[in-house]
Image (cartoon, rainbow, N blue to C red; front, side, top):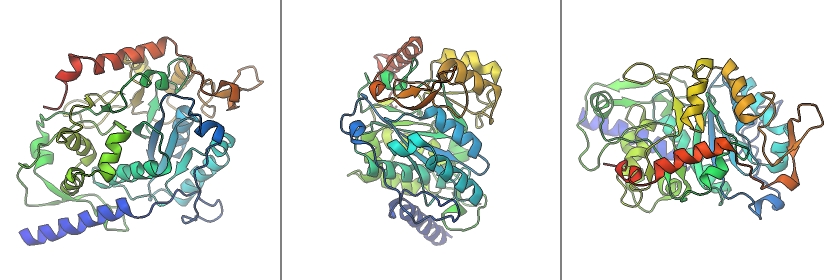
Length: 409
């Protein structure tokens, strides 16, 4: 039994490495034929790329599942900024029509094509709920974004059910707030107090069919359980993180073997995205003191054990704003609270419009919508009261004694 379990685990972890390190392509889909082999390269205008007018830059992974295309498009429009990078992963099990719709959305947007910073994973992964395929997708995205640009500062993973509560360079802007932070900081919620997760996640062994099967199915459980590790200490936390470029490189191409060793371990760990990065960073001598113990998300959880976020609505608006957090989840498509966030926080009149910022040229209509690139305003930051609220939160999280007290224990 032990030998059989070892062979199964070895085969599955080999598949994970194959998924991560196989040659990757940034691909656009043909509207008539779903073509996943054609390559589209990242081309940023020299006037933008060489001068780097913004003090920091973010690399976003935005993941979506079957049925999420409408939410995905709205989230991207709300998040977009020409100084950042955006990688879309629409899981393999989405329909061909959905893949074509997203490809058309990116290709037919004039600003996206001019700047060239919105990309699609052309060979998407099959993602299993609670399985390591979710983690593999995140690591895959990190490797692709590291490959295409050498300048971004932080990696942010979001889903189509997330939504920004701040602009990128407007009155409540993320760029200005992060510009004063040390570039090595990582926003990872972590804890070594496993609680119920010790017996429900630390000891069980599961197999994710998404690693080896062409057909999507649920994870399945191995009867025999394992003891908790003694070679390293387990940590748990939020699956939503903001990782420094340095730590992202460490996880993908690090000189130490810790990230790869833990990747093998977490292949058979349920809900591995809620533990992998926490365990890697807190067991690394180089990075364990670089964590601001927070995921910068507003999330309203269900009753204990807090496994599922409650859907947010209009009644949650005030709490979201007062939290000063830059992101929130989880939202249904076109919930009324999203319209209020657009109108009052992001200053956009319609879900198809961009969020206001110095970079965008206002249209001639009465609503002065953000319609295209504005060269003279590119690089201009206009922080307002909302930006100060976010900066206050970040200062609280990263200043002593609060910062040192919340390090890995």
